[in-house]
Length: 267
Image 1 (cartoon, helix red, strand yellow):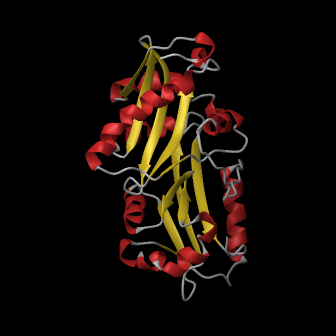
Image 2 (spheres, rainbow, N blue to C red; image 1 turned 45 degrees about the horizontal axis):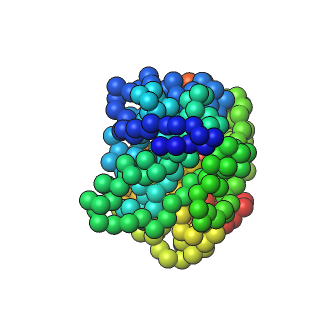
């Protein structure tokens, strides 16, 4: 396999196992990625176990050069490019481009077995990550759309809790929020909910950066994963849908809150 500037690569792609944890963490740089709030240590086991996740180590001449994660979404309808991390030695020399085809070739048996071809390949990236955007733009026939707003904040948890309690005291006129249960999920799957609340995202919901189609199988999956799911009591259909969860990182616990709403006050 030849890279840019006559750089020769001997690429081998293999699936990550539990025994690769330390190797992956070394490549992933969990103490520096996202300023120490890297999700990969917390999600390593899930990525290894999940049959819908392609978690690979990419080697060059027997050395671990990179890791990459792809997730198959919505029963194979789409593939999400979750992340790729290169060892510093393989940054800027065309390795990522050279590894693209071997990685896709490694995924092929899954789709051959299912006799189904995915219709969409996508990724979700922070606009501030110029390195990620450069890599994605290298894909042919790529279009770019930004359909969500992301807000980051860090503060003392006790102060935040006190502020939230004070804010909630003044919101008595808002509709009540209730947890979504498997036996009342039909309220979310009504067509008028998707056509209003999720119209700009084409029926996708975002849960901790990952896009999913709003359907019964995905709602069940969120419940199994232990996500908190809230919906308002608006009539005739709900006006908001929220997801929440948390995980530990090398620097501390990260809480993710994903709110989908057409009502700014309710949001």
